[in-house]
Image (tube, rainbow, N blue to C red; front, side, top):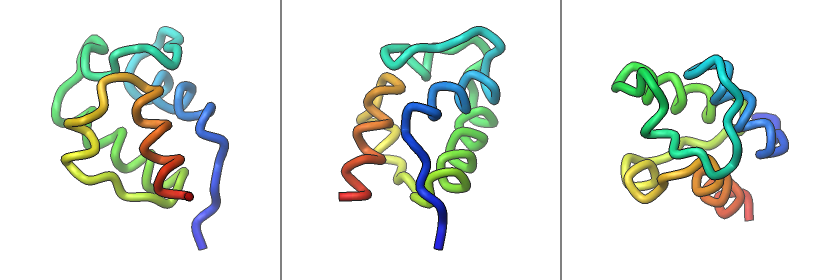
Length: 78
């Protein structure tokens, strides 16, 4: 069984994988400098690895901020 982590750490994971500066929950993850298909894949793999959930393309299309992603992950756990 995959381990569940506090979604607050998603901010740190995203920051460490995509951008060296700190992000907050309202950061527009798609507007992070150097955002591209590779970083999209990295974020997907990190979320699956750390939270045990696989987000669909629609989930990413509906999310704009880190907080949006956290909400989607929380809903998947409930």
